[in-house]
Length: 222
Ligand code: G3P
Image 1 (cartoon, rainbow, N blue to C red):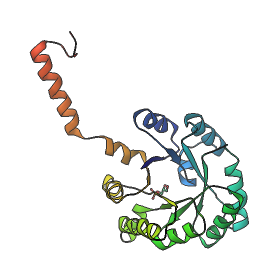
Image 2: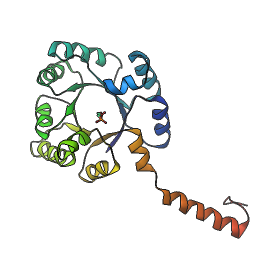
Image 3: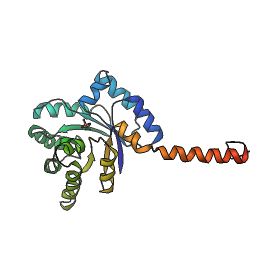
């Protein structure tokens, strides 16, 4: 499974890149604006951290098919490899995904609020799908919809990858990993919560104290 960061915060990207195996970074217009930097500066900063094997996902702003395709071409030109245009699955977006497929532009279909929308984007040639788990949870059951989408792609032999997105808690991520999700893009607070457990720190503290009491040092070798 791929682990992707859903952030444009470059210090957070550097941090998690050091501690975990990260497969890429997803952004969207809201995430970019939170960086308080200009679009180009954010993209350059993120690309200076990522290696060639780590993917970058950048979203279009245009809402009509021709505009979406133009912006997708531009996103495609930002890097030699491993760059995806994120296209929301509006009606115009679905049409644009078909065009991008013909042009050889890699597409992550995004803003997916139902398994059916995701399935249609896969039929249109999207390379990957980003269903919004928490936002769907707020409307019903996000995890169940994504598990259905996994199944729908499987029985139809569609190669499209699902990159589950919009997480608000570790339980949502847990359920999808258990269900066989191929990739998750996780906000940094949720990822840090996946890493941390207070009992681990207490256990380590006890090991150190026991050792120190017995040998009067806190290192393995004397
Ligand atoms: O990658 C899509 C994701 O950023 C949407 O997440 O937290 O705004 O629902 P959220």
